[in-house]
Image (cartoon, rainbow, N blue to C red; front, side):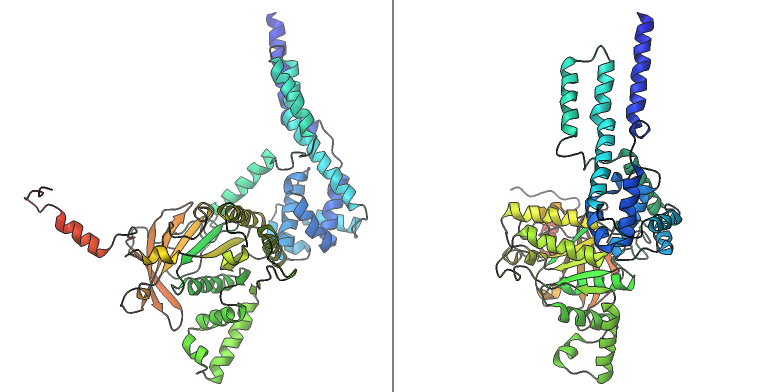
Length: 493
C-alpha cells in the first residue's frame, strides 16, 4: 500500500508537469500563425482588423508573440513594415529576417484569411483548456482521494471552456510575466516617468528636499488617464495647450479634440504660446507681418505633430448619438492616427447620456481605450460653479468635479488649475496647479507658477503648501487666536 501511495504521488506530479507545459502535448499548426503574421505585414487593411481581433497571447511558438506586439505597434503608429523599423521598435526581441522570409513566401493576403484566424484561435482555446480545466480534471481523475463533486465540477468546466468564451480574455501566464519583466526593465533603464513638459511641474525644483526627483509619477505615461479640472477662465485650456506643445516638442503625436474653443483658435493659441507673443494683440489684429508669418510657420511645425479632431457627434444621422457610438469614434481616431496623447477639451461634450451610471460606464470605456491603444488620455472637465461660489476657498477640489463619482475613480492623475486673480483683487501674475490625485505617487500637492496671461506663459514652478479646502488665512488666524498662549489656560466654553 505504501508503494502504491508513492506511485500515485509520482503520477500526480507527472500530470502536473504535463498540464504546466501543454505546448509539449497539444500540437498547433504553425502555418496559421505564419499566414496571419504575413498578412498583417503585407496588407494594411488586414492588419487593422487583425490587431483588433488577436492579442499577442494568441500566437504560439518562439518569437511570434513578440513579433505581433511589434506589428500592433506599427499599426498604432501607422508605419509600413520595414526590417530596420522593426529593429528600432523591438531591438533584439524580434528576428526581422524571419519576418522578411514570411513576406517573401506569402506576398499577398490570402482569400481564406478568416479561416486561418479561426484556426489560430481554436489552437489557443485548446492550449488554454489543457492549461486550465482539462489539466485539473486529469489530475483529479488520477487522484483516488479526489472529491467526486469536484471532479464533476471540473468536467462541467471542461465543457464550458470549449463553449462561447474560448477563454479569449485569459492571459497566458508566461507572456504576462514576460511583459511585466520588460516593463520593469524599461523603468530600470530610465523610461519610468513621462513628463507633461511644464517648467517646474514634473520634477521637484532645486532647494526642495526632493530636488531632482519626479513630482508626478509616472506622469503622462502611455495607457493612463489624466483629468485636468478648473472653472471657466481659470486657465485649464491654456495649461493644457502648453502640455500639448511640450508633447509635440518631445516628438509625441497628439490628437486634440478642441471642442470648447475650436481647432483653429486652439492651434493659433498653441503657436502664439510657443513663441511667447501677445494673445491679445493677435485677437485685436495689432500685429506686424513678421509676427503673423512667425505664428503661421510655428503652426505649420506644430501641425506635423498635433492633429485636430472636430466634434462630429450626432451629425451623421442628424440626431443625438449614444455614448458607445461616440466612444467608438474616439477609439477609431486614436487608433488611426497612432496618437501618443489624446486631449479632450471638454470630454463631456462627447457624452449624450449624463445619468451617473451611463457617465460612469463611458469613463471606464475611455480608460479601456487608453489602455488598449497605449495612448495617454487627457480629459478636461469643469468644476461645479455653484459649489465653488458658495465656498470662501475657490480652489478646485475632487469633490467639486461635476457628475459621476467615476471622475475621481477612473483617472490615474487629477490636476486642478487655479488662478487666484479670478476671485481676488490681486495681480494676475501667478497660477497654481493642485495635484488632487496620483495613483502611483504622493498627493495632495500644490505647485505655483509665474504666469503671464498675455502670452499664456507658465514658468518656474515651485512647491508651495497645499491648503485643504476651506482652510483660509482667516481661519488660520482664528485658530491661532483661540489656541492657548504659552503659560496660559484655555478659556471655559
